[in-house]
Length: 280
Image (tube, rainbow, N blue to C red; front, side, top):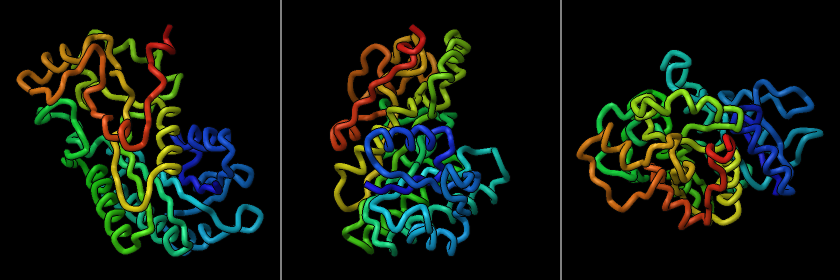
């Protein structure tokens, strides 16, 4: 496929670009900081730029088959709330609208685990936490919720459109794993997201599968690694930090407390990496 990746120079984006190219796809990067050799410097908050760039850019592409939208202010607290809101909601609207008008029918967007009630100041209703939970606790996560709702309506307007929202857990690359030792004796340090993470390479695999196997309509998936960031068994972590929270199914050993059952069943996705392998 010919695929636009927005935010292709970012932590997740750069891994996704490499992975898609290694799989034989042609990738065009949209990124405000991209140099000419790296991609197209597009301001995604400018609707005209986005519409024009998706339709085609001389010497780069003359149309694409799919869009992977990763560009965003990537977390709460990096900018004033109004900046985060305006940047992220406008960027996503313009990308979805431009893709639809250009006849692109396959879109994957970066949603967020923050929609699951993060940071988990209040205990979750149950473990593992699944996609039914929608509890935005920041402007950043509120925008992610609104982006998902917008995607639902775009798919209603265009029944042939496929939009997949990936609720990525905390994205990690191999160089991050050495830092995991710092919190092994302090479960509270990572209770804020139920000790979840996602290896950027496994996230890239999930994106590729969504582009390949998903049909028309909207779906959302939690994308987290199969284990936690801790060596302590997951049930012990939950009992220590979230006493009394029930389990809806057994969780063995260090299994994730963020449910990835839906992605496994519907995408055929299985995370292949673990931070413990990198440390071996």
